[in-house]
Image (cartoon, rainbow, N blue to C red; front, top):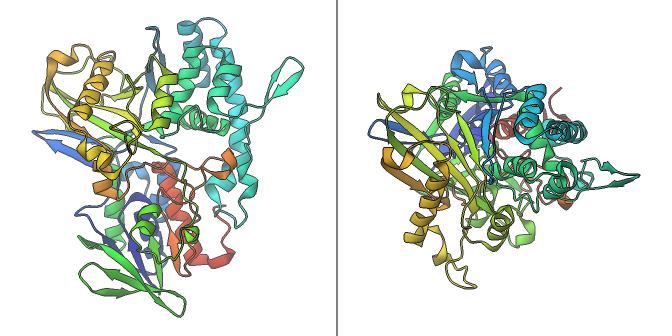
Length: 507
């Protein structure tokens, strides 16, 4: 039985902790905050509650596997998980709207034809065939296996070229796919919204990001009653049931190194804890920035999706009155200026009107009787520019003030397309920025799932760290961010410790 120290209590870290405990190891989790869950948080006030991290779950099989492997118990016995149907409503810049069913390709094709005109569904369906090809080519190395020492084959984009007359013209970015293959600005916006939801700019995201809508429309969208925070609570309870020890309010400030490998962790209070292995579940950039992991040159930092420069802004709306019976759980209200939105993200500034995702769960656990809790999110620069050419630390979100509130106003105004009478129903609102994400997780950026292509820039850190005895788990490590990917990251890190160098991933 080995001693395992886990840094952080995020979803990937807890997934690794429970699996390692089941394998017979003694596992202790050190978390600097006063709660578990990492970025999967909840904001509560006056009887209202809001998810401030992910609001929906895709690819639930990952967490089904976790609960079976750590307790022979189905996920649905631990979490009240329900499919979201319809999967979502999209409101486009020209006022056109379409409601898409959950996990039904034929239904999606029919809905798009009906709302956008004959042929729209066929073009989308053809795109999904090519997206499936990219998924099949990259699924195992990107999701189910440890990242190989030579990841250069994953630098090539697996998305196949579409035929254009007698020529095959490869699309370099997701925006190229929208223009060349979908040939309708509304379909292009639908495609781009899937990338934006994960923090990727469609103008720069590789064409392989096509796997994101494919994944959602194939495996469906799911909601946990009580909010996605309920999933984090269930994972935490599973860890406790497997005798994982949690030490909250315990900040890890360094590693103990003996004979060239990790031998434990150093804590902010000056104490140390010995360990045979360390699982680092905190964000990889923060671990190196704060010198928790020793380094002499930035060249020693592992690759960790350094191209990600976006975060999430969330507006929690407490509304008087109940939602309409036929209200969609999720509505995406698209920006009237996608090019301007992309340019603003690239420049590190706030755009005039972003694409927003409006979540309206019909869940009595999240609001007082007769009222409604609504969450509105937008992808924004992780660091914003206040003055011309300025991007200094004091210009970060914490000093945004009126500018942040004005942007929240624009987000709420966009959300009125999804919530009738929003302005008149508003009781109060809470605005959360990347600065809140930094306070809770140690980084302002929100990592996305690993994507092939883009020269490898969107591959996260490998699960085996440069320091012997240290393993990475969580959204900044392979296979990347998002609820499902973080769960897979924990499984890979645990497998590498339990089975060693012979571990080849799930079978």
